[in-house]
Image (cartoon, rainbow, N blue to C red; front, side, top):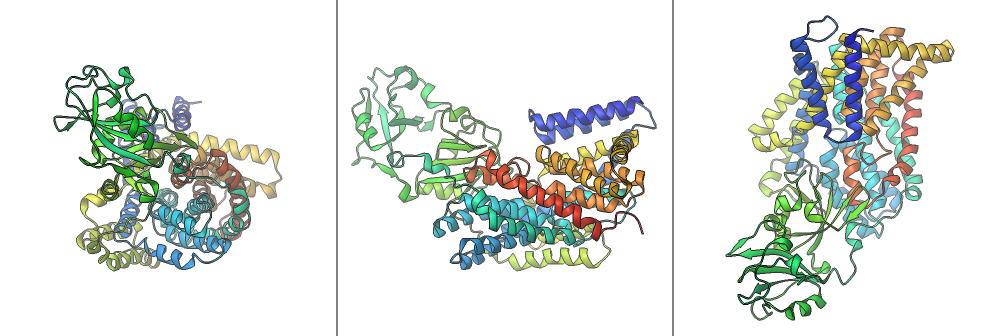
Length: 608
């Protein structure tokens, strides 16, 4: 076996292990793969290994640029309030019985997600679904998993519904085949949408458990707290001591939020800062804690007549749940590093992550995208927090500014132009999306900074890295070896008449397994070249295999980490990891069986 094949397969194995191990982020794994291929390609000269120029050639692939364009398209519709139009429809349907509402909700969300990146769709609709659940008297968990799944359903209904479709189409084009049409994949996506929606309506209510949101972990007494000030007297024995060492506030009824010295908040953990005379202590106390604070020697609690006690009670809206937003600047940083209290004037009471409610050592916890936060603060602080993009508050939908809403008809018209032009003409979709981006910016639907920040660059890095790896596998012969081994195995165990369908099923299953543990984009970029190699080896048409990969890469239902929208509802809905498996595994099977049965009838497995 040539060293090139051994090297590329070893690189593939290391990449897969890194994706699953999650010691570094997926985009860093892809970047490391890309860097390795560049380095080796610049040193060695081999016909079986891509040169430096060939590896850099992946930047000529249209798919990642089109994916970036779809992010901008989604941002334009979101910023101008177009996505919020669906919320008014839900308000009309709220009086319907839950099964009927769920069925219509699934189709509505799927329709929007067929043309817009599903992440902003789910993010915008999360507070809407929480409000709908309250008004319908049902648990939010009954609606949030269907919301995420519906957005995934929509992605399999059009070419631009999800980035994996664009990747599959782009690689097909690179190999000399016709690209996937705008509504070509709808032939399989729409029937499966009906089947899946019916499954969720009939069985979802029984399989999806009733879960409580993060705020439910608080007792009624904990919901009623006061934020007040205290001063350290200059003659106090506490001077030179830390709050932690002195044990002055060891009672659970009193928490120190911040120390202000000479008008400036002292950085770091306030419990570990040495106190000085005149320090102003910001305290959070339950009703019984106020009395205990007043009786503490060495500090002076200002009375209600001097500064007033600001009550923080759930009914006043000062306890609120929020979610760390996609591409948030606070992702990967601890609460202490962010100086959360000073920056947002809010306190994190608890964090929900991956099925667990965390309330201890919050200062050193590194926040992650999709974390659900239980926040406490004044009404003014909540309204200020609502205006920024790092945390999405879940109490009510965010309303775009009026001057931006006036641009909504323009944004919708441009987006419809993208769909129609890509559907009815031979103009490459990358050209159509680039022109659309220019129009969004020129008409003021988006600001340039908003357009740049809307692109999830980590996804593009994953795509380019995996495209480069796929190219190396193809050049080295590794793809052909894998294809020949797979087809040889099937030919040895199955009758000839069943072999094409079994190959289709095998390609789907491997992609489905990959997408549950890797990035869906990585799964598509790795599997499409292998599938084309398999098709060439046995004389099949590669198109049905690529369509199966596009569907399988998107159909990630069994885990909350396989698809981004699942991760978002995971924390907000208070779900456990197994909740997704209970509902999602049968749905994965439905997608698999439907795809294997329908695809051969829509796309012949052999060229005519």
